[in-house]
Length: 117
Image 1 (spheres, one colour):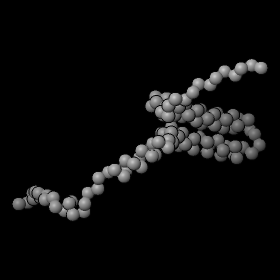
Image 2 (tube, rainbow, N blue to C red):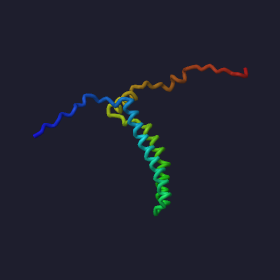
Image 3 (cartoon, helix red, strand yellow):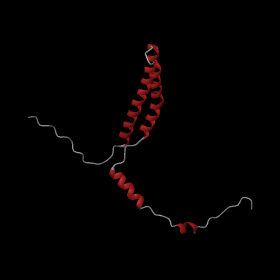
Image 4 (spheres, rainbow, N blue to C red):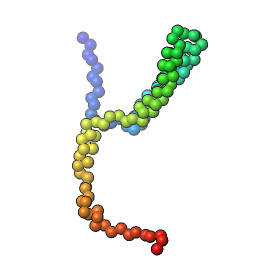
């Protein structure tokens, strides 16, 4: 029986580096823009080939050319979901924020400069 190679052990909960996240988003964006270009080329080929149900195919290609850029930008600008540790830390920092009393804000005197006087 062959011995299975050991898998590396994950020793950290650290997120991907910013450069790795950016690279991943760039790959997704370029892939979706490639699909958009494919829709344009497919539409041109379908018109020249005179296929049956041509209007339906052209509508699908046009929808891909319109909605893929929008989706690509949304996906490319999105960050990875927060981990449990990040959500926990965000909740704790919200609880620790100091809150101003309502009467302390009214005690400050503000100087008004009148341009007419």
